[in-house]
Image (tube, rainbow, N blue to C red; front, side, top):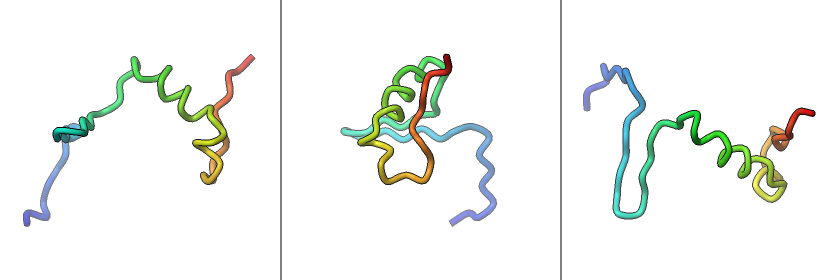
Length: 53
């Protein structure tokens, strides 16, 4: 295994059931929706996301 790996970009991982890629600004509404849900964040140390007024 090469221990001198330098990642210049986020690696892409794709399988039949998973597609993992670097997030983009277009992902922000979906991420906000997920992390605003108390059921998602109940066991995390950080608090939920809230909209600023």
